[in-house]
Image 1: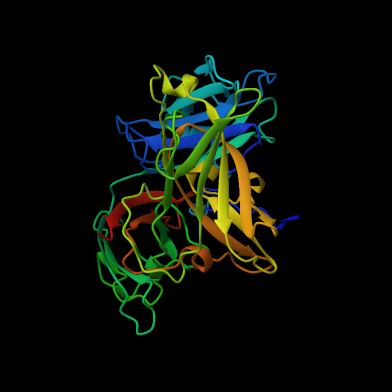
Image 2: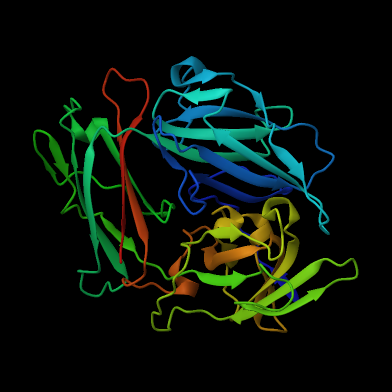
Length: 405
């Protein structure tokens, strides 16, 4: 007997719309596929967006770029205020998959390009659509920052008695070039952990304000759950089961199936360091000339051996789900096997993933399945936005990252 626990689909940062035919979304800066989509203003390193489309009957795809405020709401700026170029543009860089069991179109987009040149810092949203920009098949966030402030940032482990899974950030913002008159209103600080804005964690307020510096060193809200390292599996080869894969087989049509190792909850297990990718993946396929168009899509089987969680759903989560709780990644509980199960098509790659518990009508729970430790390796990024009474949009005036190791 199988039971599918249904919960509302909630997206985390980077939030997006994604059609079921859109797969393997990656967005990064420069040549580093594992970087977050945060680019320096007027940098020579472009932003790159990759994705695959299973819908071969779809006509041409187009894209548009819109400006957003610090909380990712469209701020209504006219296109001429934040970019030079055209409002709507065709996606010209695409290629059909070659000799794969599952056919797909691979798309690539770089910004800036001949059609789009950005001229304002802040948050942006790319909308990919077929006919109507109001009905996108994919939206993707990215940010552009200035170097207008200096951010001193460091991290430390738990210092609160009884809270051995928290990590603390201490940082200050120096702004001698900005006429900040009211730091509480004009500055907005947003913190992400491995590119994700953790639900339920409020953004910090200043602890001390001086003439050209705002300090968040002793802010009481600068505590973040460390979580646990991501789990990993490797489908770059289909000749045998590599890391995290217990069996490779093929169906009648030749579509490969990778059955992953059986997982168990880790909330009561001791912490173990894993050199992970902080939730991301890298597409690769052994003995392939072009990994983007020759890599196969593999039916991938996840199994989490655990008792059923009452009034809650379990999702597989990571960049493989575009860091969102997508319905395609909701697991089904098999009462006879005593395990949650999921089969989903994923492109050949080296993957990170984790399990997320989503209770009904309550915030999602990061630690119920995976555990939580102050020792966990995490990458924190602090973004500082500035908006004076005369400005019409939130400028992203500084970005700084720190790793807990």
